[in-house]
Length: 369
Image 1 (tube, one colour):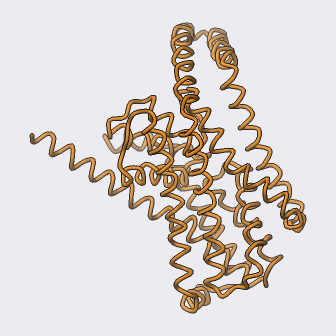
Image 2 (cartoon, rainbow, N blue to C red; image 1 turned 60 degrees about the horizontal axis):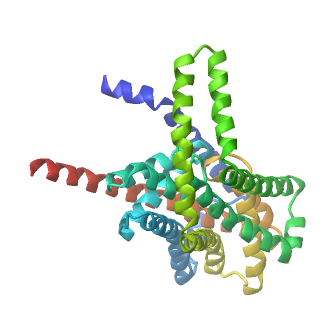
Image 3 (cartoon, helix red, strand yellow; image 1 turned 120 degrees about the vertical axis):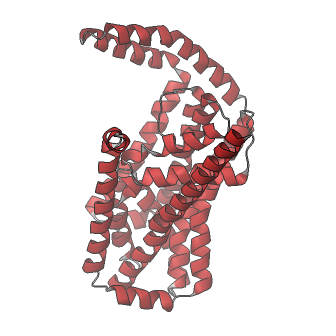
Protein backbone atom coordinates (compact mmCIF):
# COMPACT_ATOMS: atom_id res chain seq x y z
CA UNK A 1 0.00 0.00 0.00
CA UNK A 2 2.82 2.39 0.88
CA UNK A 3 4.56 1.77 -2.47
CA UNK A 4 1.32 2.41 -4.36
CA UNK A 5 0.74 5.58 -2.34
CA UNK A 6 4.28 6.81 -3.09
CA UNK A 7 3.86 6.16 -6.83
CA UNK A 8 0.48 7.89 -6.87
CA UNK A 9 1.77 10.98 -5.04
CA UNK A 10 4.88 11.27 -7.21
CA UNK A 11 3.36 10.17 -10.51
CA UNK A 12 4.06 13.45 -12.31
CA UNK A 13 7.66 13.58 -11.03
CA UNK A 14 8.29 9.99 -12.11
CA UNK A 15 6.89 10.72 -15.57
CA UNK A 16 9.06 13.85 -15.88
CA UNK A 17 12.12 11.88 -14.80
CA UNK A 18 11.47 9.18 -17.44
CA UNK A 19 10.82 11.80 -20.13
CA UNK A 20 14.07 13.57 -19.21
CA UNK A 21 16.03 10.32 -19.46
CA UNK A 22 14.49 9.52 -22.83
CA UNK A 23 15.19 13.03 -24.11
CA UNK A 24 18.79 12.83 -22.89
CA UNK A 25 19.23 9.38 -24.50
CA UNK A 26 17.79 10.63 -27.78
CA UNK A 27 20.01 13.72 -27.71
CA UNK A 28 23.15 11.66 -27.08
CA UNK A 29 22.20 9.25 -29.86
CA UNK A 30 21.51 12.14 -32.26
CA UNK A 31 24.88 13.74 -31.50
CA UNK A 32 26.75 10.46 -32.02
CA UNK A 33 24.94 9.59 -35.25
CA UNK A 34 24.93 13.15 -36.60
CA UNK A 35 28.66 13.51 -36.14
CA UNK A 36 29.44 10.06 -37.44
CA UNK A 37 31.29 9.27 -34.22
CA UNK A 38 31.41 5.83 -32.64
CA UNK A 39 31.81 5.09 -28.96
CA UNK A 40 35.25 3.57 -29.64
CA UNK A 41 36.37 6.78 -31.35
CA UNK A 42 35.24 8.80 -28.36
CA UNK A 43 37.17 6.51 -26.01
CA UNK A 44 40.27 6.91 -28.18
CA UNK A 45 39.80 10.68 -28.04
CA UNK A 46 39.66 10.57 -24.24
CA UNK A 47 42.74 8.31 -24.02
CA UNK A 48 44.70 10.73 -26.22
CA UNK A 49 43.51 13.78 -24.29
CA UNK A 50 45.74 15.79 -21.98
CA UNK A 51 44.81 14.69 -18.47
CA UNK A 52 45.87 17.88 -16.61
CA UNK A 53 43.33 19.88 -18.63
CA UNK A 54 40.67 17.18 -18.18
CA UNK A 55 41.23 17.31 -14.43
CA UNK A 56 40.83 21.10 -14.54
CA UNK A 57 37.57 20.61 -16.45
CA UNK A 58 36.34 18.24 -13.72
CA UNK A 59 37.34 20.70 -10.99
CA UNK A 60 35.48 23.47 -12.81
CA UNK A 61 32.41 21.24 -12.95
CA UNK A 62 32.68 20.75 -9.17
CA UNK A 63 32.97 24.52 -8.88
CA UNK A 64 29.48 24.80 -10.33
CA UNK A 65 28.15 22.95 -7.28
CA UNK A 66 30.59 24.46 -4.79
CA UNK A 67 29.99 28.15 -5.57
CA UNK A 68 26.25 27.68 -5.37
CA UNK A 69 26.69 26.10 -1.95
CA UNK A 70 28.88 29.02 -0.87
CA UNK A 71 26.21 31.49 -2.01
CA UNK A 72 23.67 29.68 0.16
CA UNK A 73 26.06 29.75 3.14
CA UNK A 74 26.59 33.50 2.77
CA UNK A 75 22.85 34.14 2.71
CA UNK A 76 21.84 31.90 5.61
CA UNK A 77 24.77 33.22 7.68
CA UNK A 78 23.40 36.73 7.16
CA UNK A 79 20.03 35.44 8.35
CA UNK A 80 21.72 34.13 11.51
CA UNK A 81 22.19 30.48 10.56
CA UNK A 82 25.87 29.73 9.80
CA UNK A 83 26.54 26.30 8.32
CA UNK A 84 29.47 24.13 7.21
CA UNK A 85 30.85 24.05 3.66
CA UNK A 86 30.04 20.36 3.35
CA UNK A 87 26.41 21.11 4.20
CA UNK A 88 26.33 23.92 1.64
CA UNK A 89 27.67 21.50 -0.97
CA UNK A 90 24.82 19.06 -0.23
CA UNK A 91 22.21 21.86 -0.43
CA UNK A 92 23.57 22.83 -3.82
CA UNK A 93 23.89 19.22 -5.03
CA UNK A 94 20.24 18.61 -4.16
CA UNK A 95 19.25 21.62 -6.24
CA UNK A 96 21.45 20.62 -9.19
CA UNK A 97 20.31 16.99 -9.26
CA UNK A 98 16.58 17.48 -8.81
CA UNK A 99 16.54 20.51 -11.11
CA UNK A 100 18.11 18.33 -13.78
CA UNK A 101 15.30 15.76 -13.67
CA UNK A 102 12.24 17.99 -13.23
CA UNK A 103 10.68 20.50 -15.66
CA UNK A 104 11.59 24.16 -15.13
CA UNK A 105 13.93 23.05 -12.31
CA UNK A 106 10.84 22.74 -10.09
CA UNK A 107 12.24 19.91 -7.96
CA UNK A 108 15.47 21.60 -6.89
CA UNK A 109 14.08 23.94 -4.26
CA UNK A 110 12.02 21.38 -2.28
CA UNK A 111 14.96 18.98 -2.24
CA UNK A 112 17.35 21.65 -0.95
CA UNK A 113 14.75 22.85 1.56
CA UNK A 114 14.54 19.32 2.97
CA UNK A 115 18.25 19.26 3.88
CA UNK A 116 18.32 22.85 5.10
CA UNK A 117 15.34 22.40 7.39
CA UNK A 118 16.88 19.19 8.71
CA UNK A 119 19.79 21.38 9.81
CA UNK A 120 17.38 23.39 11.94
CA UNK A 121 16.80 26.36 9.64
CA UNK A 122 13.31 27.91 9.68
CA UNK A 123 11.28 28.27 6.50
CA UNK A 124 11.97 32.01 6.09
CA UNK A 125 15.76 31.55 6.06
CA UNK A 126 15.49 28.52 3.77
CA UNK A 127 13.36 30.28 1.19
CA UNK A 128 15.72 33.27 1.22
CA UNK A 129 18.66 31.05 0.32
CA UNK A 130 16.79 29.01 -2.25
CA UNK A 131 15.98 32.00 -4.41
CA UNK A 132 19.66 32.74 -4.82
CA UNK A 133 20.16 29.20 -6.08
CA UNK A 134 17.49 28.74 -8.70
CA UNK A 135 15.70 31.97 -9.17
CA UNK A 136 12.32 30.23 -9.09
CA UNK A 137 9.39 31.33 -6.95
CA UNK A 138 8.08 29.16 -4.14
CA UNK A 139 5.21 29.55 -1.69
CA UNK A 140 7.09 32.20 0.29
CA UNK A 141 7.07 35.37 -1.81
CA UNK A 142 9.36 37.30 0.50
CA UNK A 143 11.49 40.30 -0.37
CA UNK A 144 14.64 38.30 0.35
CA UNK A 145 13.76 35.75 -2.30
CA UNK A 146 13.03 38.43 -4.87
CA UNK A 147 16.33 40.25 -4.20
CA UNK A 148 18.30 37.06 -4.58
CA UNK A 149 16.43 36.18 -7.75
CA UNK A 150 17.61 39.50 -9.15
CA UNK A 151 21.19 38.65 -8.11
CA UNK A 152 20.97 35.25 -9.78
CA UNK A 153 19.52 36.68 -12.99
CA UNK A 154 21.97 39.57 -13.05
CA UNK A 155 24.89 37.13 -13.01
CA UNK A 156 23.72 35.53 -16.26
CA UNK A 157 22.58 38.81 -17.82
CA UNK A 158 25.96 40.40 -17.00
CA UNK A 159 28.03 37.84 -18.86
CA UNK A 160 25.47 37.92 -21.68
CA UNK A 161 25.79 41.69 -22.10
CA UNK A 162 29.59 41.49 -22.03
CA UNK A 163 29.39 38.80 -24.71
CA UNK A 164 27.14 40.88 -26.96
CA UNK A 165 29.38 43.94 -26.61
CA UNK A 166 32.71 42.21 -27.30
CA UNK A 167 31.68 39.27 -29.49
CA UNK A 168 28.71 40.30 -31.68
CA UNK A 169 30.09 38.36 -34.67
CA UNK A 170 29.86 35.08 -32.77
CA UNK A 171 26.13 35.69 -32.34
CA UNK A 172 25.72 36.53 -36.03
CA UNK A 173 27.38 33.23 -36.99
CA UNK A 174 24.55 31.22 -35.39
CA UNK A 175 21.67 29.95 -37.50
CA UNK A 176 18.39 31.91 -37.44
CA UNK A 177 16.94 29.28 -35.06
CA UNK A 178 19.96 29.64 -32.77
CA UNK A 179 19.65 33.43 -32.79
CA UNK A 180 15.98 33.19 -31.83
CA UNK A 181 16.80 30.88 -28.91
CA UNK A 182 19.56 33.19 -27.66
CA UNK A 183 17.43 36.33 -27.97
CA UNK A 184 14.49 34.52 -26.37
CA UNK A 185 16.63 33.35 -23.45
CA UNK A 186 18.01 36.86 -22.91
CA UNK A 187 14.55 38.43 -23.01
CA UNK A 188 13.12 35.86 -20.60
CA UNK A 189 15.92 36.42 -18.08
CA UNK A 190 15.62 40.20 -18.37
CA UNK A 191 11.85 39.96 -18.08
CA UNK A 192 12.10 37.93 -14.88
CA UNK A 193 14.57 40.42 -13.39
CA UNK A 194 12.25 43.35 -14.14
CA UNK A 195 9.15 41.49 -12.96
CA UNK A 196 10.58 40.51 -9.59
CA UNK A 197 12.19 43.92 -9.10
CA UNK A 198 8.73 45.44 -9.50
CA UNK A 199 7.33 42.92 -7.03
CA UNK A 200 10.05 43.95 -4.60
CA UNK A 201 9.34 47.67 -4.89
CA UNK A 202 5.56 47.38 -5.37
CA UNK A 203 4.11 44.98 -2.77
CA UNK A 204 0.61 46.01 -3.84
CA UNK A 205 1.14 43.89 -6.97
CA UNK A 206 1.39 40.83 -4.74
CA UNK A 207 -1.74 41.87 -2.86
CA UNK A 208 -3.62 42.44 -6.12
CA UNK A 209 -2.55 39.01 -7.38
CA UNK A 210 -3.67 37.34 -4.14
CA UNK A 211 -7.02 39.09 -4.16
CA UNK A 212 -7.47 38.17 -7.81
CA UNK A 213 -6.92 34.50 -6.98
CA UNK A 214 -9.40 34.77 -4.10
CA UNK A 215 -11.96 36.36 -6.41
CA UNK A 216 -11.52 33.59 -8.96
CA UNK A 217 -11.96 30.96 -6.26
CA UNK A 218 -15.22 32.59 -5.18
CA UNK A 219 -16.50 32.38 -8.73
CA UNK A 220 -15.62 28.69 -8.66
CA UNK A 221 -17.57 28.45 -5.36
CA UNK A 222 -14.47 27.71 -3.30
CA UNK A 223 -15.45 30.23 -0.63
CA UNK A 224 -13.58 28.66 2.29
CA UNK A 225 -10.28 28.64 0.42
CA UNK A 226 -10.86 32.22 -0.77
CA UNK A 227 -11.50 33.35 2.82
CA UNK A 228 -8.34 31.58 3.96
CA UNK A 229 -6.23 33.38 1.33
CA UNK A 230 -7.69 36.78 2.22
CA UNK A 231 -7.06 36.25 5.95
CA UNK A 232 -3.44 35.27 5.37
CA UNK A 233 -2.80 38.13 2.93
CA UNK A 234 -2.27 40.84 5.54
CA UNK A 235 0.12 38.79 7.71
CA UNK A 236 1.99 37.66 4.60
CA UNK A 237 2.47 41.25 3.42
CA UNK A 238 3.65 42.26 6.88
CA UNK A 239 6.24 39.47 6.84
CA UNK A 240 7.20 40.54 3.33
CA UNK A 241 7.89 44.07 4.56
CA UNK A 242 10.08 42.75 7.36
CA UNK A 243 12.07 40.68 4.85
CA UNK A 244 12.64 43.81 2.75
CA UNK A 245 14.25 45.55 5.71
CA UNK A 246 16.42 42.56 6.66
CA UNK A 247 17.68 41.82 3.16
CA UNK A 248 18.18 45.39 1.97
CA UNK A 249 20.18 45.97 5.14
CA UNK A 250 22.68 43.35 3.97
CA UNK A 251 24.24 45.00 0.92
CA UNK A 252 27.55 43.22 1.52
CA UNK A 253 25.72 39.88 1.54
CA UNK A 254 23.98 40.70 -1.74
CA UNK A 255 27.28 41.64 -3.40
CA UNK A 256 28.86 38.38 -2.23
CA UNK A 257 25.83 36.39 -3.41
CA UNK A 258 26.05 38.08 -6.81
CA UNK A 259 29.78 37.38 -7.16
CA UNK A 260 29.35 33.74 -6.12
CA UNK A 261 26.50 33.29 -8.61
CA UNK A 262 28.73 34.83 -11.26
CA UNK A 263 31.57 32.44 -10.37
CA UNK A 264 29.13 29.53 -10.49
CA UNK A 265 28.09 30.35 -14.05
CA UNK A 266 31.66 31.00 -15.18
CA UNK A 267 32.89 27.73 -13.67
CA UNK A 268 30.36 25.85 -15.80
CA UNK A 269 31.37 27.75 -18.93
CA UNK A 270 35.12 27.15 -18.57
CA UNK A 271 34.55 23.38 -18.45
CA UNK A 272 34.27 23.59 -22.25
CA UNK A 273 37.50 25.59 -22.54
CA UNK A 274 39.54 23.12 -20.47
CA UNK A 275 37.99 20.20 -22.36
CA UNK A 276 38.92 21.84 -25.66
CA UNK A 277 42.54 22.30 -24.53
CA UNK A 278 42.58 18.69 -23.29
CA UNK A 279 41.72 17.70 -26.88
CA UNK A 280 44.79 19.66 -28.02
CA UNK A 281 42.80 22.65 -29.28
CA UNK A 282 44.35 25.89 -30.48
CA UNK A 283 44.86 28.69 -27.97
CA UNK A 284 43.68 31.45 -30.30
CA UNK A 285 40.19 29.88 -30.38
CA UNK A 286 39.65 30.16 -26.61
CA UNK A 287 38.12 33.69 -26.53
CA UNK A 288 35.67 32.79 -29.31
CA UNK A 289 34.85 29.48 -27.67
CA UNK A 290 34.24 31.26 -24.36
CA UNK A 291 31.89 33.70 -26.09
CA UNK A 292 30.09 30.85 -27.85
CA UNK A 293 29.49 29.04 -24.57
CA UNK A 294 27.99 32.17 -23.01
CA UNK A 295 25.50 32.37 -25.87
CA UNK A 296 24.69 28.71 -25.22
CA UNK A 297 23.89 29.54 -21.58
CA UNK A 298 21.58 32.36 -22.67
CA UNK A 299 19.80 30.24 -25.28
CA UNK A 300 19.30 27.28 -22.96
CA UNK A 301 17.15 29.50 -20.71
CA UNK A 302 14.63 29.93 -23.52
CA UNK A 303 12.75 26.69 -22.85
CA UNK A 304 11.74 24.98 -19.56
CA UNK A 305 13.63 21.76 -20.28
CA UNK A 306 15.80 20.28 -17.48
CA UNK A 307 19.41 21.20 -18.14
CA UNK A 308 18.39 22.64 -21.50
CA UNK A 309 18.72 19.11 -22.92
CA UNK A 310 18.53 19.25 -26.69
CA UNK A 311 18.59 23.06 -26.89
CA UNK A 312 22.01 23.46 -25.30
CA UNK A 313 23.39 20.60 -27.42
CA UNK A 314 22.02 22.19 -30.60
CA UNK A 315 23.55 25.59 -29.81
CA UNK A 316 26.88 24.06 -28.81
CA UNK A 317 27.23 22.16 -32.07
CA UNK A 318 26.19 25.09 -34.23
CA UNK A 319 28.62 27.37 -32.41
CA UNK A 320 31.56 24.97 -32.32
CA UNK A 321 31.33 24.23 -36.05
CA UNK A 322 32.24 27.86 -36.70
CA UNK A 323 35.56 27.35 -34.93
CA UNK A 324 36.66 23.81 -35.83
CA UNK A 325 35.95 20.82 -38.04
CA UNK A 326 32.66 18.93 -37.76
CA UNK A 327 34.30 15.91 -36.12
CA UNK A 328 36.13 18.07 -33.56
CA UNK A 329 32.92 19.97 -32.80
CA UNK A 330 30.96 16.78 -32.12
CA UNK A 331 33.70 15.27 -29.97
CA UNK A 332 34.03 18.48 -27.94
CA UNK A 333 30.26 18.72 -27.47
CA UNK A 334 29.92 15.14 -26.27
CA UNK A 335 32.86 15.32 -23.87
CA UNK A 336 32.30 18.81 -22.43
CA UNK A 337 28.54 18.33 -22.12
CA UNK A 338 29.15 14.96 -20.53
CA UNK A 339 31.34 16.56 -17.85
CA UNK A 340 29.37 19.77 -17.24
CA UNK A 341 25.91 18.17 -17.13
CA UNK A 342 25.80 14.38 -16.91
CA UNK A 343 28.83 13.81 -14.64
CA UNK A 344 27.77 16.82 -12.58
CA UNK A 345 24.31 15.27 -12.17
CA UNK A 346 25.78 11.92 -11.09
CA UNK A 347 28.11 13.53 -8.52
CA UNK A 348 25.20 15.59 -7.21
CA UNK A 349 23.10 12.44 -6.89
CA UNK A 350 25.85 10.72 -4.88
CA UNK A 351 26.25 13.79 -2.63
CA UNK A 352 22.49 13.86 -2.00
CA UNK A 353 22.47 10.14 -1.19
CA UNK A 354 25.34 10.54 1.28
CA UNK A 355 23.65 13.55 2.86
CA UNK A 356 20.42 11.62 3.25
CA UNK A 357 22.23 8.64 4.85
CA UNK A 358 23.99 10.96 7.31
CA UNK A 359 20.65 12.50 8.28
CA UNK A 360 19.12 9.06 8.81
CA UNK A 361 22.04 8.01 11.02
CA UNK A 362 21.76 11.17 13.11
CA UNK A 363 18.06 10.51 13.57
CA UNK A 364 18.63 6.93 14.72
CA UNK A 365 21.35 8.08 17.17
CA UNK A 366 19.03 10.73 18.59
CA UNK A 367 16.30 8.13 19.12
CA UNK A 368 18.71 5.81 20.97
CA UNK A 369 19.69 8.64 23.31
